[in-house]
Length: 344
Image (cartoon, rainbow, N blue to C red; front, side):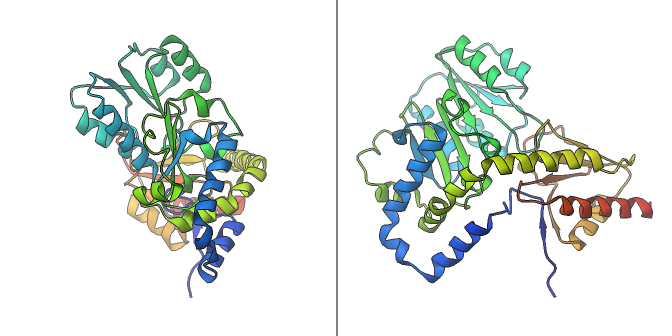
């Protein structure tokens, strides 16, 4: 008999709403949506434009956020300028890998904090990559800091990774328009895998695509038409339930803070308001701890955290929650920690 799984890893599983699952299932039973696939693509782009407060012409769909940042690096390389690239230290590996290869000798690293960004000395040839919320739950860059940087260095190029931030956002936030380029992954926003959103307010990377049909642009990027259809049909639910999701996130965070077991061998780190928690172990075998988690049906992330952060030491488990998780699931998680403690 299969054991029900409890998903505490929004990277590999990304919980979906019941409506999303229903539309996805029905899309295999009834294929008539294929006859209107371009309409569904345009509908999704219109909905994204309305929520983000960004012109429709500035938005493009790509296979993933990694595809988006690589397209940005490629466009900057084509310009053959002596760019000064500023990257957040310890960021997601997909943000850094191509830049470190393409711009050798032109890269410097900064501490991904408000103060770390404010202390940067930028020029007209500077490119600043900002991950608004990181995938470890350890950093968050405020809008106030970004506005200061934009005002102080209006000619510097700002790139924003909004992937971990967007699910807690509100409609038409200023942060969506402060970057020259920004991007996010649909699966971190209650959407499907295989779709990324690329916002190009400069319209440099998107130039040359405007005259193409939606279908040609989608085929060029090898997008998943079913993913586009399902997200277009369920995006309105995301907006309608956004306040509910934000409130649920606060409740989950509060429960975690108030009820996480206080034992000397286990601790956690997380920036305020984040639902990503790094749990560190001391004096407990990581294999044994994860065995109890897996035996109870928990899906989580350990060791491979898709991060370039070399400061992570010792046994670490990452739990990344979603507003679609329940307090009862955290209760079960904390009971396992109590069980492990009783065996020490």
